[in-house]
Length: 145
Image (tube, rainbow, N blue to C red):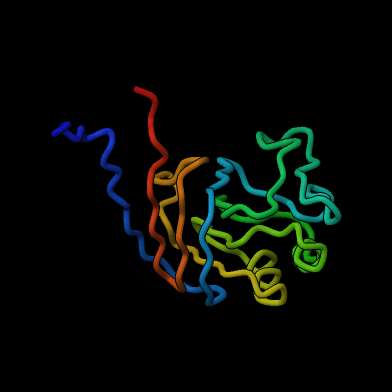
């Protein structure tokens, strides 16, 4: 019988935060170390991050669990999040270290599950994340041997 190494056993990390928008979603994490400005920073037609100075420039948020410290910029960013949802290129859920009104309102009006007050440093791009209300379950991606 083959032995299972600790690298093969990926134990989920359970985090608890504050519910901003209740709901359930699961998918692959896309983690930004920097805040995101939705108005002008994300294309509402494609979900691609447009800001040339952002570390995720050129990457799409569509169908991902978007993890970032907080939003920034104009209050019209809330409407951009709604446009992302209407165009079916929105994130499946959003996780913040500390949400602010722009992103929170966007998640609420777009019906995107959102949690904040999470230690986002424990989540990496490529991890599998399940969000259910204030509970976040993170299954780390497999590390190369």
